Length: 283
Image 1 (cartoon, one colour):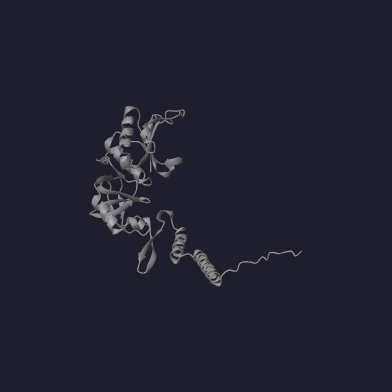
Image 2 (cartoon, rainbow, N blue to C red):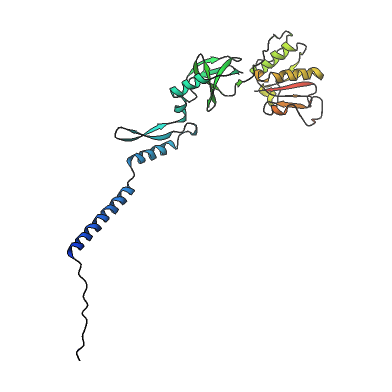
């Protein structure tokens, strides 16, 4: 008996279909290759920005440059700016000067600078006790004021909202302090001598602490008169350059001025506890 075998044959794909498939695969491969190549090669603009950022990373923190991208011509270019250059842009300066309305008083003679940066030029000086316009802008250790319609920069910390007291009068009792003491100690002596001419003993130089540096003075007085002198100096501390006062076992300091007079521990004697003199330390 003859066995009938079924012949199995693979279906043949038409030639036109094979050709179309090959072309599609080739196109897909080209697209994928192009994408990989493009992703591995950053744009020239991005490389420039990264290089600029790397250079700026070692700049001083107070004047750190930043990069912005702007379109110009046929492509994009990187523009480098900094907080200082933005601050000193002509438009920004003009706006600050025009909008300045608040006035403050100088507490010391101050140098006037063209900018707050390292390349600033000194262009004059303003006396202590002068009332000036302030713009409210600051940079580093300087603040901006307006002098004769122009923006000028002065050292921060020497402007006050309150008019400094006028310390008039001359010392007429013949007392003096050594020439080697600080200028602020000379101011303290001159002011106290003019206001309290009966005080004739001032202790300055001695071999310890602030007295040895010439920045401290003991005004020999006691009782209520001592408190009058202590309060007089405290009221004029800015003009006299005072850092702190001690009298009658109590201390007042600029750093903790909001606390008023503060009690001190017992040091064992009237002199050590400052009952017989007002101690003044200046800057």
